[in-house]
Length: 288
Image (cartoon, rainbow, N blue to C red):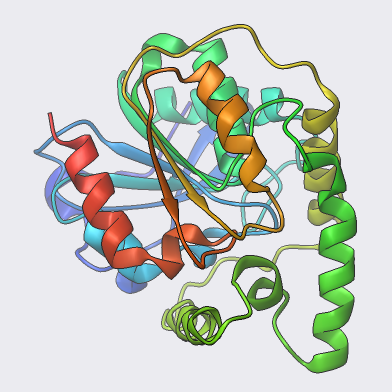
């Protein structure tokens, strides 16, 4: 397994300027971006949501988290500029991420999973529990979680609505439709356009279909009996249409010692919508 050379002292300071690096693992080339101070704490690995590439990360969220630690954002197989065919099961996505983490020379990490990334993170914990020290699950659900099998219908309905109204699908899917939610959505859309050069490749419809199938399978599966007794943080929006609030209680069955924060007037994009409060909570949670 090979990777580009990027030492702790060479990591850039701002997400919008961070170069896209590559690492070869599990037979394909994965793209990733890293920034922050590599000398402090356990590295934080970020796994993004369905239909997203590396450019979908909120720059202000990443920059705030990287103030005190090394942050590594990894692209999935077959998504964006990562090579190979997109995975249709979270178990396979998790195996890929475990291989990438090892290829980067890491033996212990914290993990932040957004939505689908949180589902892949749960599989990482099942397959390699010794690899993860602390986990943050935002807007996600467990196997068999309520409403997960309806995600495809929710997405298609809102994508069509977006086409008709000339509105980004992520605005309709991820944010509330209150004045606060609309303002947060507009601000988020502006922030993810701040990166001008070195942008990731666009996500294709084939990727979206495969990832929706993965969520659908996850929603039909029986809950895993394993529990994670390490430090865990669960973040959720009270108005999440894609992963309903009902997923928090069964998620707690697998993470019995988790700290739970539910944000009012917040949708699926609970992290960007509440970025200042969330990054403060995550930073304090990750402090040893």
